[in-house]
Image 1 (spheres, helix red, strand yellow):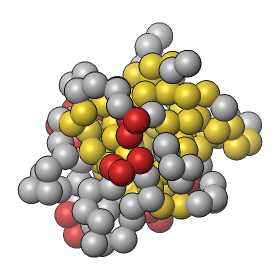
Image 2 (cartoon, rainbow, N blue to C red; image 1 turned 135 degrees about the vertical axis):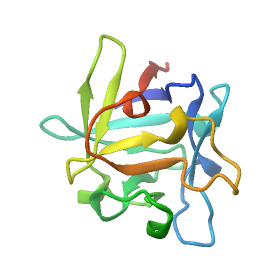
Image 3 (cartoon, rainbow, N blue to C red; image 1 turned 90 degrees about the vertical axis):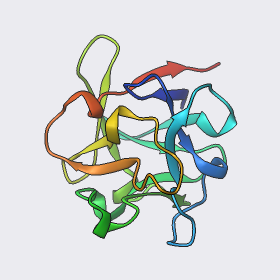
Image 4 (tube, rainbow, N blue to C red; image 1 turned 60 degrees about the vertical axis):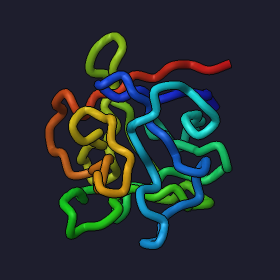
Length: 150
Protein backbone atom coordinates (compact mmCIF):
# COMPACT_ATOMS: atom_id res chain seq x y z
CA UNK A 1 0.00 0.00 0.00
CA UNK A 2 1.30 3.42 -0.99
CA UNK A 3 0.01 6.71 0.45
CA UNK A 4 -0.34 9.55 -2.07
CA UNK A 5 -1.87 12.91 -2.82
CA UNK A 6 -3.22 13.22 -6.37
CA UNK A 7 -2.61 16.51 -8.15
CA UNK A 8 -4.66 17.66 -11.15
CA UNK A 9 -3.26 19.71 -14.04
CA UNK A 10 -4.16 23.09 -12.46
CA UNK A 11 -1.93 22.20 -9.50
CA UNK A 12 -4.89 21.62 -7.19
CA UNK A 13 -5.46 18.32 -5.40
CA UNK A 14 -8.13 15.65 -5.64
CA UNK A 15 -10.30 15.66 -2.50
CA UNK A 16 -12.52 12.90 -1.11
CA UNK A 17 -15.06 15.13 0.68
CA UNK A 18 -15.44 14.24 4.38
CA UNK A 19 -12.57 11.76 3.93
CA UNK A 20 -14.80 9.49 1.81
CA UNK A 21 -18.08 7.71 2.40
CA UNK A 22 -20.23 9.76 0.02
CA UNK A 23 -22.25 8.58 -2.93
CA UNK A 24 -26.01 8.86 -2.84
CA UNK A 25 -27.67 11.80 -4.56
CA UNK A 26 -28.15 13.75 -1.31
CA UNK A 27 -24.35 13.92 -0.89
CA UNK A 28 -23.45 16.36 -3.65
CA UNK A 29 -19.96 16.17 -5.09
CA UNK A 30 -18.22 13.33 -3.26
CA UNK A 31 -14.97 14.47 -4.87
CA UNK A 32 -13.61 17.95 -5.55
CA UNK A 33 -10.57 19.24 -7.43
CA UNK A 34 -10.22 22.63 -5.75
CA UNK A 35 -7.91 21.94 -2.78
CA UNK A 36 -4.76 24.05 -2.88
CA UNK A 37 -2.91 22.10 -0.17
CA UNK A 38 -2.67 18.50 1.02
CA UNK A 39 -4.92 17.96 4.03
CA UNK A 40 -6.42 14.75 5.43
CA UNK A 41 -9.14 14.56 2.74
CA UNK A 42 -6.50 14.77 -0.02
CA UNK A 43 -4.69 11.62 1.12
CA UNK A 44 -5.30 8.31 -0.61
CA UNK A 45 -3.86 4.82 -0.41
CA UNK A 46 -3.07 2.95 -3.61
CA UNK A 47 -4.03 -0.66 -2.97
CA UNK A 48 -2.72 -3.26 -5.40
CA UNK A 49 -5.59 -5.46 -6.59
CA UNK A 50 -4.32 -7.76 -9.33
CA UNK A 51 -1.64 -7.44 -12.00
CA UNK A 52 -1.36 -3.74 -12.82
CA UNK A 53 -4.76 -2.89 -11.32
CA UNK A 54 -5.18 -0.78 -8.21
CA UNK A 55 -7.91 0.62 -5.97
CA UNK A 56 -7.86 4.11 -4.46
CA UNK A 57 -8.74 4.08 -0.76
CA UNK A 58 -9.86 7.25 1.04
CA UNK A 59 -8.92 8.46 4.52
CA UNK A 60 -12.01 6.76 6.02
CA UNK A 61 -11.14 3.42 4.41
CA UNK A 62 -13.73 3.64 1.64
CA UNK A 63 -12.88 3.17 -2.03
CA UNK A 64 -13.23 5.49 -5.00
CA UNK A 65 -15.88 4.13 -7.37
CA UNK A 66 -16.27 4.84 -11.08
CA UNK A 67 -20.06 4.34 -11.16
CA UNK A 68 -21.07 1.68 -13.68
CA UNK A 69 -17.36 1.05 -14.27
CA UNK A 70 -16.94 4.43 -16.01
CA UNK A 71 -18.24 6.18 -19.13
CA UNK A 72 -20.19 8.80 -17.16
CA UNK A 73 -19.83 12.54 -17.36
CA UNK A 74 -22.59 14.72 -18.70
CA UNK A 75 -25.03 16.21 -16.20
CA UNK A 76 -27.75 13.63 -16.88
CA UNK A 77 -25.48 10.87 -15.56
CA UNK A 78 -25.22 12.44 -12.07
CA UNK A 79 -22.26 11.68 -9.84
CA UNK A 80 -19.95 9.49 -11.96
CA UNK A 81 -17.65 9.10 -8.93
CA UNK A 82 -18.59 7.89 -5.46
CA UNK A 83 -16.45 7.33 -2.36
CA UNK A 84 -18.75 5.08 -0.34
CA UNK A 85 -17.70 1.56 -1.39
CA UNK A 86 -16.47 -0.58 1.51
CA UNK A 87 -14.81 -3.18 -0.75
CA UNK A 88 -12.83 -2.98 -3.96
CA UNK A 89 -15.17 -4.52 -6.52
CA UNK A 90 -15.05 -4.19 -10.33
CA UNK A 91 -16.12 -0.51 -10.32
CA UNK A 92 -13.37 0.34 -7.81
CA UNK A 93 -10.54 -1.07 -9.91
CA UNK A 94 -8.35 1.26 -11.96
CA UNK A 95 -5.22 0.98 -14.08
CA UNK A 96 -2.54 3.65 -13.75
CA UNK A 97 -1.02 4.44 -17.13
CA UNK A 98 2.23 6.40 -17.11
CA UNK A 99 2.04 9.15 -19.76
CA UNK A 100 5.20 11.08 -18.84
CA UNK A 101 7.95 10.69 -16.25
CA UNK A 102 5.73 12.49 -13.69
CA UNK A 103 2.14 12.00 -14.92
CA UNK A 104 -0.39 9.18 -14.99
CA UNK A 105 -3.81 8.62 -16.48
CA UNK A 106 -6.32 6.73 -14.33
CA UNK A 107 -8.21 4.22 -16.47
CA UNK A 108 -11.57 2.79 -15.38
CA UNK A 109 -12.61 -0.85 -15.73
CA UNK A 110 -14.51 0.08 -18.92
CA UNK A 111 -11.35 1.54 -20.49
CA UNK A 112 -12.29 5.21 -20.14
CA UNK A 113 -10.28 7.76 -18.14
CA UNK A 114 -10.87 9.93 -15.10
CA UNK A 115 -11.09 13.59 -16.09
CA UNK A 116 -10.53 16.60 -13.84
CA UNK A 117 -12.98 18.92 -15.61
CA UNK A 118 -11.33 22.18 -16.76
CA UNK A 119 -8.07 20.73 -15.43
CA UNK A 120 -9.34 21.03 -11.85
CA UNK A 121 -10.32 23.80 -9.47
CA UNK A 122 -13.96 22.73 -9.20
CA UNK A 123 -15.74 22.04 -5.94
CA UNK A 124 -18.71 24.26 -5.17
CA UNK A 125 -22.21 22.82 -5.78
CA UNK A 126 -22.88 25.09 -8.77
CA UNK A 127 -19.84 23.55 -10.51
CA UNK A 128 -21.41 20.16 -11.11
CA UNK A 129 -19.32 17.07 -11.75
CA UNK A 130 -15.68 18.04 -11.17
CA UNK A 131 -14.66 14.47 -12.09
CA UNK A 132 -15.94 12.63 -15.15
CA UNK A 133 -15.21 9.06 -16.24
CA UNK A 134 -16.18 9.27 -19.92
CA UNK A 135 -12.96 10.36 -21.66
CA UNK A 136 -11.87 7.94 -24.36
CA UNK A 137 -8.49 9.60 -24.93
CA UNK A 138 -5.81 10.99 -22.63
CA UNK A 139 -5.70 14.77 -22.88
CA UNK A 140 -4.42 17.42 -20.45
CA UNK A 141 -7.42 17.02 -18.10
CA UNK A 142 -6.79 13.26 -17.80
CA UNK A 143 -3.24 13.62 -16.47
CA UNK A 144 -2.54 13.38 -12.74
CA UNK A 145 0.60 13.64 -10.61
CA UNK A 146 1.04 11.46 -7.55
CA UNK A 147 2.92 12.83 -4.54
CA UNK A 148 4.24 10.12 -2.23
CA UNK A 149 3.34 10.69 1.42
CA UNK A 150 5.23 9.21 4.33
